[in-house]
Length: 353
Image 1: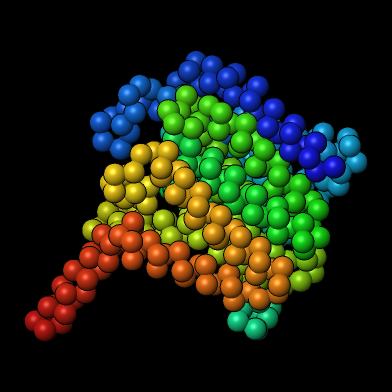
Image 2: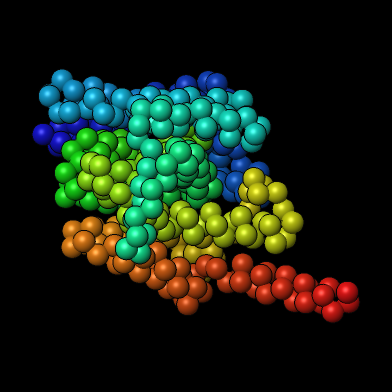
């Protein structure tokens, strides 16, 4: 029964995306080359996230008509619509970061107010009752996930590939934890992105824009805290963070790097993980294949971790992937050198004092 909404999502995105490209061109929602961060050869329409969002909503409606349970997904679908609208407004009118942040918080409120907040977490054999802090931490988690994918999405096909990889892994986990509605959401999200990727893979004819990257970020961060736990169970924190290993690593490095050089956190640069891989001589397609492999490793490890009831395996993936990337000089090296330089300066200042 879950296959029908999945296919509907794919087909809807394929047919809707050309129309969205036309609207983006008419409204001026174009990503124009600037010779610095944006090095594509010609202006590319954004607003692709609108097609993805509408495809998800249509597939959810079809699922409801085919008697697949979707009632519990109403809050997250409402949040999806809100975050897509916030992102679309930003794509067209260029919102200031503080107002975008406010919009992100408003967008995730339906999820939290509907009772989908994490109230208990399982960490290294101990269950922690979050109490009143559960809602606050859930908002923080979702908003962080929104911005993580927004930071990561800087290359043709990268954001959509990330969404597909993480959603498929979440769907598999949700099936074995008996979360049918969560599996449905994960599959229609993956399906909509697969349809969109027809136009988004290199060379991209349309970009996700903030309407799409923020939608993906919210959805995958929601799936990461819902799929690994059966109803009423505590969340295995290791599984949630391990699913998002690549976005968490890339965003953490970006924040650290910009802080160490005294740059605004929201100021973009060309030093993200995919830039580092491109600098190793990889083509854009090779970078996508490499990152898809990482998503397979983290997703499969998380699935096995939940299936056999050994959450420690997920922590192994969360730590092992960055270690592999660092050892292979694929990323992290610049931030390591910047951190060592900063520590040397601190020692010099202490001696002078």
